[in-house]
Image 1 (tube, rainbow, N blue to C red):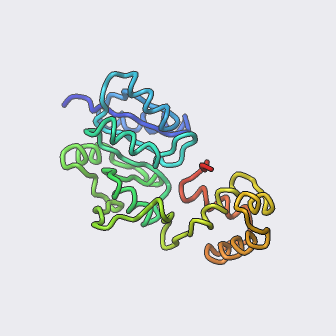
Image 2 (cartoon, rainbow, N blue to C red):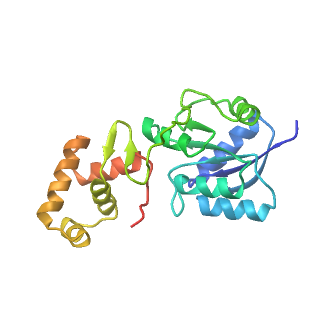
Length: 218
């Protein structure tokens, strides 16, 4: 069997190197491109003058995260299978990923993972149907209208509040950006704390990281 051409994106160099080493210990691959974010990955693929059979992409990356990278890969390399590897395993987030066209999902906490089996299944059948696999819904979740994370659906204003808090904005500054009073923003915050069962800005930031975002767009 010829080496499988793969491309890989993960923002942690050590993790990326360890992942490549693990894969190469299990199956013959040709790593044609790699990067610490989606932008670097796409540039590396273009410069390789090759098309990857499989793109392995982390979700939480700076500059261009996994969510943003997927549509670019689909447009530029429609034959490439996309395998997401991440700590994010909220059911609705996974459903969204499969709805937009990924071919498999691996949890980063999965130990002693069999990449050879996963790669062969994706390339032969089109999907890696492990415990995280979800068939596409006929009525796809509207990711642009709401952010879906587990059983919690956040409103646009709640997501906006989180984004500004992650960026370090204070209540008054957020109020100015939203053209509302500080009291109104405090009400957003209190409602969000109750919904998420948290009590501090630190927990808000931790929640944001856990749902797969390290940097936010304005």
